[in-house]
Image 1: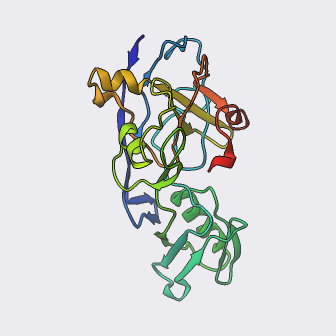
Image 2: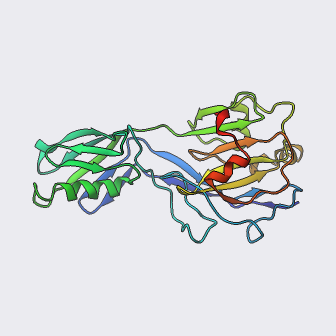
Image 3: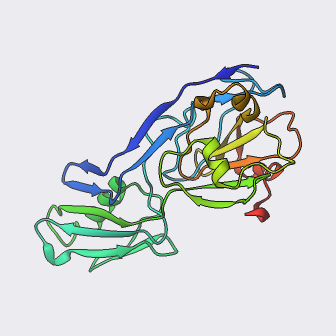
Length: 259
């Protein structure tokens, strides 16, 4: 049994500037990149082995293990119900507060609808500038994210209280399991699965041998969670799981009905 550890801390900054476009986060959020995997005796292989690469959603994670997914820091992407404040440097009469609607659009004063869902703050800032090009000469706008969905993780399977929990600070895999009520008597401690979204189609899956981690007191090897992570504690042994899998194939391991 081998242990692969390689963690890189990433941080999402509160201010993002692009020439005359300024996009500001209302709150800084520290996120960590998942780069370690602990293998169990199920025949799982590590990086460079037989496991393949995959999964995620806008602004939650980057695919560091799949060359098709690229790399770089994770950036927050706008979600439905997010509230943004727009400030126009030279035209304050256009200042406004907008909300991302259920259809993913926001509606600008005199400029109509603009698709916001899934955009980074920089991309949204450019979209607003483009929308006002016909009304203003060289529009200069600052975008501030005022309200947004708070970071969270989901715990399921053989834990005391399956559900969705706020990710308020740096939280390890072991801490998250305790927050969710700890293991049940039927839990498979040696095969705890961490699912992480990489993009809209792929989910990265990592198996952690928590039993070995605790017995050897190697708590530092526990993964640090990132927003949107799903922890699944199985009841029975899982003989094989690919490191990356498509979102539909997750149903083999996790039933959406339990959340």
